[in-house]
Image 1: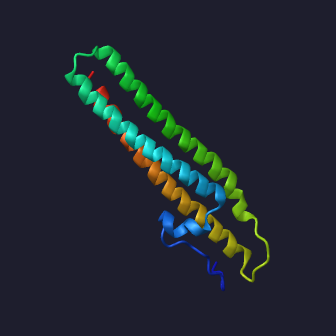
Image 2: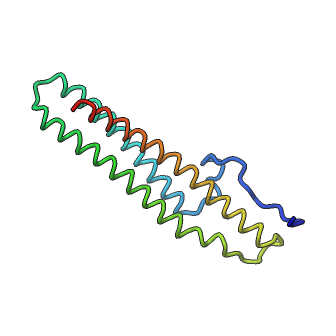
Image 3: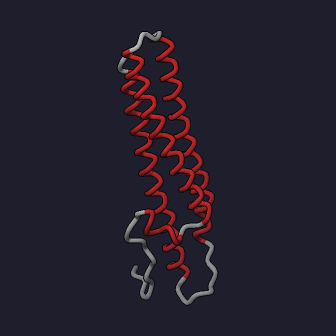
Length: 149
């Protein structure tokens, strides 16, 4: 079935800067929070790795040092998981809004729905990519600390 005259507004580029003007306020707010969490995760991972290498050279108790490092890793894991669940809640609560169209334009409602879904999915692709990177950082730090047991 071919629809004639329907030109969906599909985002060709999924980069966050190309879709930023069309994002709703809560998506922009979430992106800002995700950016802050990303910085926190990177600094915490670097701190854990640095403390791990320093604790191996010092005469600290290996058990107390390992407990502190594992607490930091657990904290990183919880932060990344919380951001994932917050995104899921935000995304799935905003998704039904894509199907609410108002006939103020001459374009078809299908065109409006496809454009809105395209924006939601483009944002989701960016968020999942960042969350994947944060998970990989956390996983690599965790493997490095746990391999020294």
